Amino acid sequence: MAGEATTIARPYAEAVFERAVETGTLDAWSEMLALLAAVVSDPAMAGVIDHPKLGGDQLAELIFDVCGDKLSSEGRNLVRLLIENDRIGIAGDIAAMYEQLKTEHEGALDVHVTSAFAMDAAQEQQLATALKEKLGREVHITSDQDPELIGGVKIRAGDLVIDGSVQGQLSQLANVLRT
Image 1 (cartoon, helix red, strand yellow):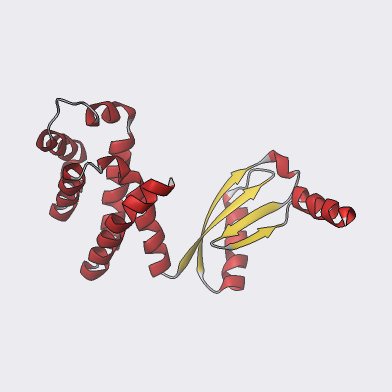
Image 2: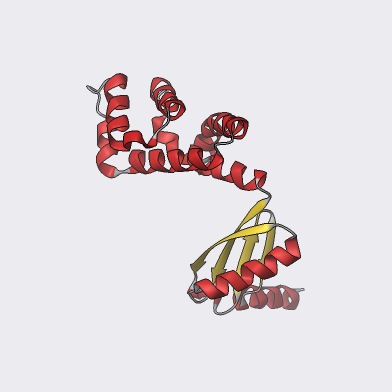
């Protein structure tokens, strides 16, 4: 998320999150925000959103038609508010920030693993189990591949970074040798 978009998205995400907690609809809001983010980020829709001759009410109705009955009345109100404030373009940022708030609320931790080689589901599960024991929290893992690591993994869990990559170890060795 870009800095300015994050600043703009934060109050919307926090307000939606507070309402979702209050009404017990955390998962429903996750689905609505993900759908809205997908609709708004679609390249064909982006051209329509920016069209100068399309009014706010028309845009809202178009989004409602695309989303069908998957938006609750509160979800529709959010769409109207975002359009009215010319903020519909940050729906993806709102959704991402909402998911972070939801994850924290549920006591879980989002962990991103960068590996020299692609990880399969069994390896991710094994790592998630080990991290859950170490961190004492539920863990949601996402992973990607970076061959430049040579071997091993880099793990990012919030502010915690564990660099177990060969590249990281070589960098540490180089720093030691420089001193």
